[in-house]
Image (cartoon, rainbow, N blue to C red; front, side, top):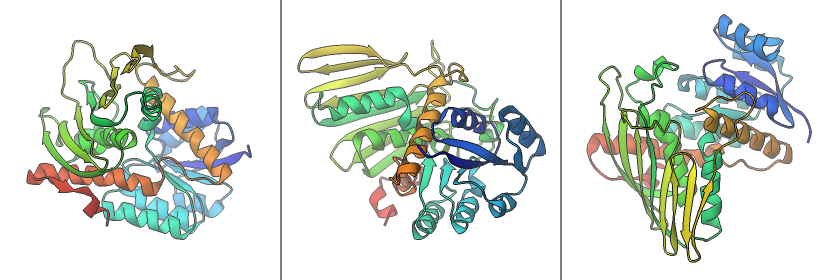
Length: 344
């Protein structure tokens, strides 16, 4: 594979995982980094041996010398940076949430399409080993045609200690975590025609919602429930596992806590361990997410070199982003929302 040079914008909390993963990716490496905070720039630059360091993204793009950019900043800057990348003919990876609004997301997809440039959203959860295992079983036809599902992420983990800004936004769990779970639901059961959502704020110290329950009507006739919570105090903390239940015409799939996969089909029930690999730089319990960061970035490098579209291309992620917007609309109105109408 041809070695691709990349640049990373944003050296915050999660970007360190992306930098570690880029060191493991075959066929790509980061040669330049950018951040407005000089201390974060210094820490990441020193840790990963990156000599080219910028405090201004425009200056970095003007200097060039890289084949793609990985945008790991907060959502407010995404559109401007994606448009800057497109103006400089640079393919881009953009961190989730993709944009502040669906209109912004559509504009970002359009500008890259018009420039003939790949655009991928760093929606890594579908790349987790257990999620991939569920998808493989489903595609094998073991449980027949799925007609019902549940995608659940319920936790009491203190995410605010590492990312205190999450407590300050008017929107929280659907935008930050639910977006992943909704994407998994789409990935497993297909696109969504309509949804209904309810939200609640349990933690009085945050501004946004920390519990959400979303009912999805999939275009293929299946029904699923996405339920997410950072207010659930459990006997064994499951963070950061997504638990899945699927019922089909010929059997069922259950992905339960501890990465246990139970598949029931015509020939009986099989139980397997689908635990993620603990990479050399990873740490429990984050290793599930950290491994998926490596997996999606390897996917990007391979597709960029080969010229193929990525699994979480910008156009695909519009459908996930629309679910987030529809969920907030439904929670506010108490009504079912037509998702397909939002994408027209």
